[in-house]
Amino acid sequence: MPVEIERKFLVRDGRWRAAATRALPMVQGYLGGMDGKASVRVRLEGDVGKLNIKAAVVGMTRAEFEYDIPAAEARQLIDQLCVGVVEKVRHWVPHAGRTWEVDQFSGANDGLVTAELELGDEREAFERPDWLGDEVTHDRRYYNHALALHPYSAWPPP
Image (cartoon, rainbow, N blue to C red; front, top):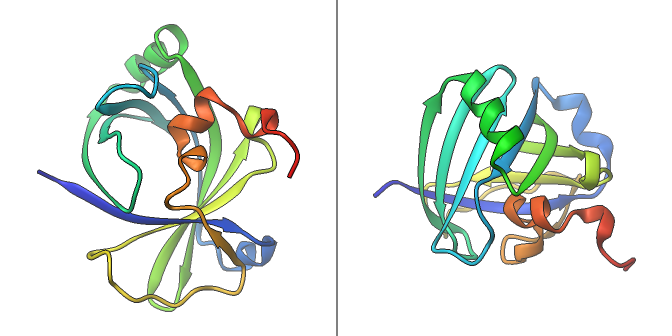
């Protein structure tokens, strides 16, 4: 079974922008709530459609399946069947031999910026960029599925 091993962090400031090599707008929706065994996501990455299924567990390692689908079908699924939507721009930011994915959210999650790093092993060491903030890998609120249903803009002030 394919797995994803990923760490997620808040982003402290905008210093990452100078190193970004690529950016891609994304919109994604979820085909159900958060009470099942899996998260089923439909995403438009620019003009490419994707269907993604992840185990609905909190943590670094989760089973993950992803398939290309026609962009028009992805748009139709997002518009007609999804229960929550997330809009963001993903930026690829190289640092110390790795590439971080920095997501700058918009819409109902405007103001939130997170960074993710995929690893080959949960214990794999990596160098943290200076712009990286607190780790939120184990905080379900920051999972995109949760943000689609309970947006950042609706959270109580800290």
